[in-house]
Length: 350
Image (tube, rainbow, N blue to C red; front, side, top):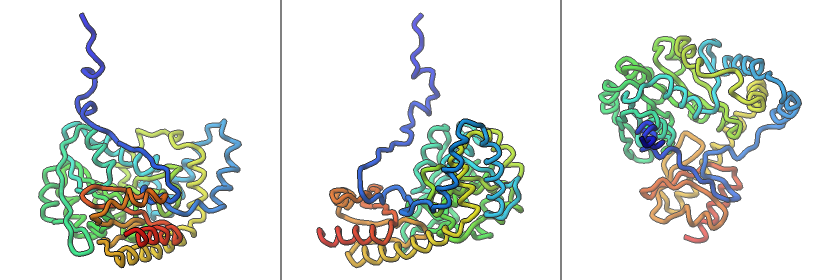
């Protein structure tokens, strides 16, 4: 008897899913991945270098606990309400794989962060999509439509502010968030990756609504994208359950080291956020003067509408941005010098 092929043995949703399709580009100015244009501060780098000599030891658990303790002070919760992960993606992966069964229903926004779609597909979930729509210089959501979809679902994932539009969705509204938390069959997940830029959060609501889960990251405002540090905030019951899929050794020593140093002295976060906001205003105003439709943003990127393929055009000059299709482009907010270069290139060729 012939042996069944590997494809026949795999779960059908794994075979059908495309997964995360990524190919980086060579560019002097990287404005396509929402990275911080500013490197980690010197005290963070020094702390990592000093700890590298212990790379032969399993001291991760000690560092893990210290990092977790520092997170409690930063977030303003107890230690049983927060858990470190391998970036925001690690937090999403943990939630999708530990809280759902295949064929569970999940509500997501359209558009939304790409990995939400990826994990929905890889997990074999039924997707209920709620479309955002243009409203002047923002993107908005029909809350009644969202509420109706949430009533039919087990999991809801909302990135707020939204990626890739940069628009606020619920704005930390107690009324709106509580309504969703009360009717969802399982859990309401709010991705607050851009919290430091937006300034609003739903974390205080977790005390009254233990089915609310918040995801955050140290990639953007902390300038630590390459170290893959994120965390989950939730009720003690949720955190206890989700943490069972992790060990204290999962997050590498260098990543824990930079996280500790960054949280012990996080004064530079405000410097980064303030700099990004100034550059965002420069970039937004400059693009609008050139005739582009630029949407308002509460993040470290802006969404641009253009009939011209500005991705290909800018790439010829060593500047990378992200094309989203339908004449929409996401442009990360770089340093002032990078934003000026982008504006000069577009102004000179259009």
